Image (tube, rainbow, N blue to C red; front, top):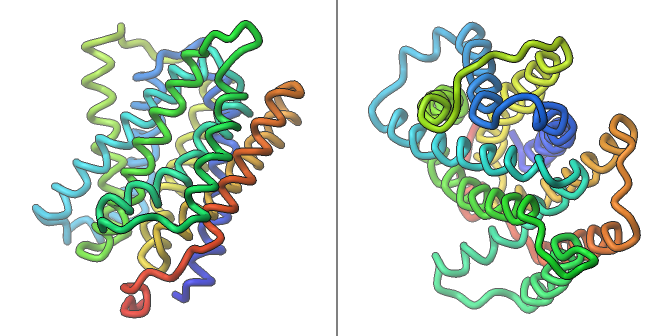
Length: 292
């Protein structure tokens, strides 16, 4: 697989994830966060195991260890997102989560101990202004839902960096499958500790769960590790900046959401900052060594 093909694959993943905010919004008011996460990852895991059962015989300790780590991050990402979606719109959640694209190069800067490019610094400033417009309400109070979405963005930035490292050491497809099982496992534990376990009752709730499980999870989180083996973390973050655009379109069409002038201005600034910060994206040195 070439880097161009990997990037095109990530665009389809980003489009699929754009629908996830609509599905999560539909679940937010009727299904508890841990139940939603457990069901979406559990169903996705079962489907992927059924399709790729023969590959699972190659699972080893390293694979399980890495899967347990990124599975915990996945669980944390979507638990915080579900809590955030209770008090914010699907469109706003999508744009707030896109700040991941800024956080990835910032975190990598600390890891490699090298100052970021000036475009990244400018991008961070612009995104910060955009985030402020989305988070701070007219009465100058902070939206807790928006803050939850920002925590999810931070966790996801860590996830992207770790995935980029792990897929160089283990089978990307197996990692993508096993992480789903661990995310489900953690969510089930949380469900029994923090909530009262209960399955959804409405048909619409189950349709939203299936959409999350099959489109956003089974496809998205299995294809992402595979594609990331052939592209860089910065390119991954850049392509995922398309996700809030898709989420805003889907939310407008299916949920009739309108973020208002302040919200759209904030979203526009976030996108501008994201594109500016990633305009210096370069190929990862290990990409050229990756073989199909």
